[in-house]
Length: 319
Figure (cartoon, helix red, strand yellow):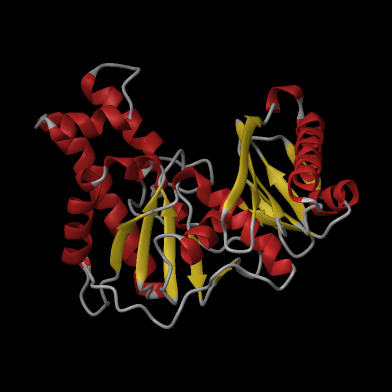
């Protein structure tokens, strides 16, 4: 059976899969990234993990993987196949595509983790059928993936989609990027966790606790949550004004709050638009498999055998 290797490398853990031509996960595995052992050990861990998957695929399906796709965090030069920089993993200018191709003996595609997850959601998940979408995961930070006709736009320098660094509160909280008032300082899961921990006096409280408190009617939690929703709506309206997506996909840890997030967010976005067309605002569908599925799509794209792509413009009801 023809298959490819897919790897989704995170700051603390790696997810891997063997993926068939239809985007089906034939085998899944996980292991720690091992960043505490240093950047060289992380690279060797990725290479070793991929080699194990190649051997497993050959044994189970009678032939080795036809290609491999890998998604990594940080700054990624996809054209050259270089992991240019990752603060979490401690590496600079790692020629990961070439290293993997040499170890595996197959073609390899390298992608940015959020854009790769967006590719998965766009073709196989919540964006399927939409000609243009914006995927925004709300996690430790906030990033974005701009989907256009079945592909994800990287930009001229690989920075396209960095919605978390749109300034929504000028002069506000300093951001490590060097600006003040960036969206992710107010609307990421980590920002909500910090704000709620301060408001409730429990240093261990997090965004999930805040969402539960909102659902129970806690006024303090409601204020923290609304501040995050308002900031997020401001950033999203700026993005949709520029990009005009048909579907806006929200993922990441904060989206796990379900309608506790989506109901006020849809209202807040609706109140802010004037001439803009309101996109469908929907939760991500693939969960933490989006990165692996997207990496698999990158690999199949190398072979010219991509999994199902979007159809003509969606007629999904707008909310």
